[in-house]
Amino acid sequence: MQSLKRHPALADLSRHHHHALALCLKITKAADDANAQPALIEAIRQFWEQGGQEHFREEEQFILPSYSRYAEIDHPEIIAMLLEHVHIRALADIITRIEGEHQADIRQFGSILEKHVRREERVIFPMVEKALPEEELERLSPYLHEDSPHCRIQPK
Ligand SMILES: [Fe+2]
Image (cartoon, rainbow, N blue to C red; front, side, top):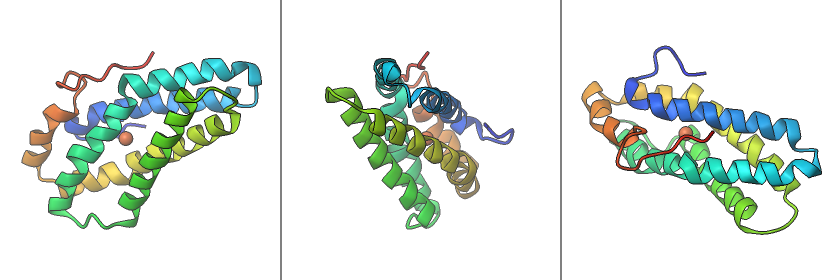
């Protein structure tokens, strides 16, 4: 999915999107199997705790504030992206923290996450690459890398 033209500053986030899509595929394949639920919950926990929430935070803390300096932030795609962040955060919290039956929550988590990743790859990241000057992308780059101080760990 990562575009050949993806700016290096956004490449690690794009790579992480691939992990997210792999998780979505796993969920799609197993969501109807009640026996698979514990393994899916564990996979979601790993995705979320080992990089997922850091990834969201980096987009909210670094990419969008920077974007707002160069382009109109009050944009339907940005609003949709942020609402998806909220929904995904809420579902991740419910699924990983509250004991119980979560088949519908897991299915919803997978479908929102997939739609969200495709929106960011196809629409948001191209908007960011177009709006931000090269020097601004380079300035952000250290905050968005796997070896940044925030140190995302890739899910297996
Ligand atoms: Fe993202």
